[in-house]
Structure formats: structure tokens, C-alpha cells
Image (cartoon, rainbow, N blue to C red; front, side, top):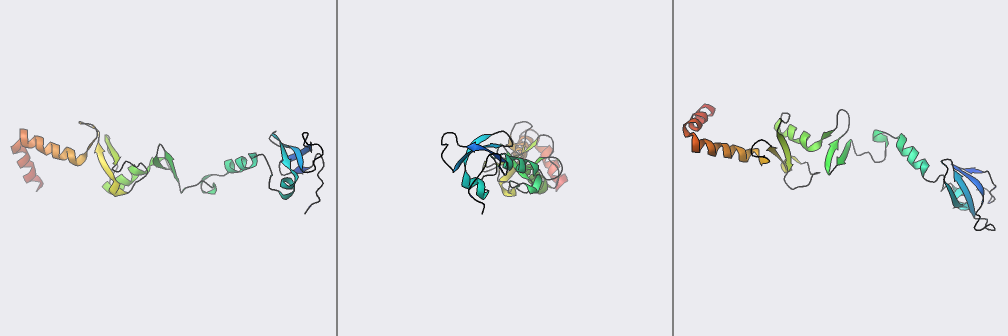
Length: 171
């Protein structure tokens, strides 16, 4: 371990010692220091000598900003959230996870006017069993199965022979 004496102009990490703490000039344990970024603070000598205080915090910020993707400590496997929705950010364009899960479930891309609804209301719960396909075209925001039932009811009511004919063709 170094000797306890610290002199003006000495550097520790990004700190440069300016002198003793002006509020306590007789104290040998507190020093006024300037960080490379320009911040001036009073720091205890033992924190400088042991390396526990290497900067005002700018070192960590600079280090994190230089880290990208899976090198960053906040990396969550290519996932991020926006307004509670999980976004997939790994490679390619950013996509909402619930839409990708529904497309896999359907075996096709979502069509214009189709949306994905979270049954339990939790936007980050993207299990296939928690997702429903909704269609936005008339009437807005209903389940596709409800719309099929509605369409069948309309055909029964207004064109029962067309419904019977379509069922025969399908079956």
C-alpha cells in the first residue's frame, strides 16, 4: 500500500488533486480534486489511495456508452420494452414480440387491419395462449371468431340458402 501522503497535482484514476479541503485545511484525510471532465469534489484520501473513487461517475458512463449489444450489462437478449410491449431488437428491424408470436401461431404474416390482443391485459405476457387475433375492420376491435359467428348469423338471417350452399362447398 502507498504511503498516506498525497501531494498537489497527483492523479488517481481521472482525479487530479488540487489541494487539501479548504473547509478543513488541517485535515490530512480530505482533498479537493478535479475530474478530467471538469467536476470538482472533496474526496477522502483512503478512497483515492485504494482506488475506490476513480472518477466522478463519468468513467462508468463513458464505459457503458462504448458497450454495444451483448457487451452491455443491461443486454436482455435482444429484447427491449416500449410502453410495456416487448420489442425484439436483435438483428433486422425492430418488431413487437406479440406480433411475431401470433404470426408463428397462424403460420403467416399479419394482414392489414389485424391486430394482436393480450387477453390478460399484460403487454409483456406474449405466450401464444394469452394472445388473440383481432380485426379492426367493421366493427372495430372484435375477435375474429366473434366476427365469423356474426357473419354466419347475418347469412342465416339474410341469405340462408347462400350459407347452406357455402357449407356444402366447404364440407
